Length: 264
Image (cartoon, rainbow, N blue to C red; front, side):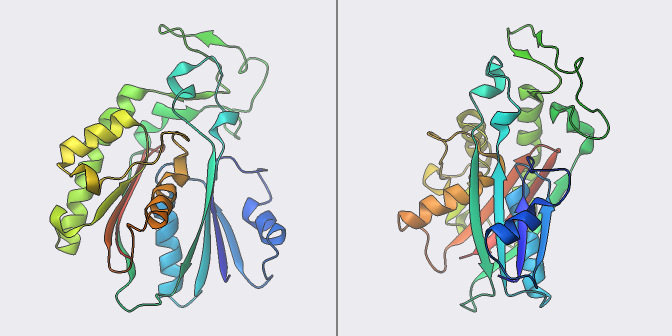
């Protein structure tokens, strides 16, 4: 391993960087780079772009991308609006210089809209708003969900609106950039937000269900690790092999989104 990228929104400490802790826990060499990226649902695609860039520039040949999120630590057990959606999970992905000349990762497209930050947020715990006795006071919303400012909050309707607005644009941007159409792809692997979101995207994008794989029933929305979980499932079933073309689409907290064209 020449470089370690750790994508998480639940680091062990403010400092040191959790990637540095992972370097020694995994017994990796000391002459490597190690860095954290704080990004959620689009984090895997962003991480792939960083890994691909490190390899393309000659900085590294083997990059270990780890995604890990434990949103359960932020969720109030009496908040059904998020408790029923999210799960904890981690994935490790090894990105290497292409063993086949036909394999590639990218191009990528990215998007950011920080004006929507409060639609999916843990408000306290950072330098701007430290946790305190007042921030831990719980309130009940009109739907009966209980949470404090220390807990995860999501405006589901706003996130859904953002998703249906930006994800189709991202897909079409990749079509134009690469010169492809839906027929050219074997699979579209999207962030596994929930069944309702994925059903809506499948309809809006007019993608056949066999090209839009799912993997969330038992584990829920594992944030940055949902896309690699789907890829692993495709590999394990023998459906993903050399030469297959895949589009990856991450979207969510930030608000942030990213897409990637890949030839396996």
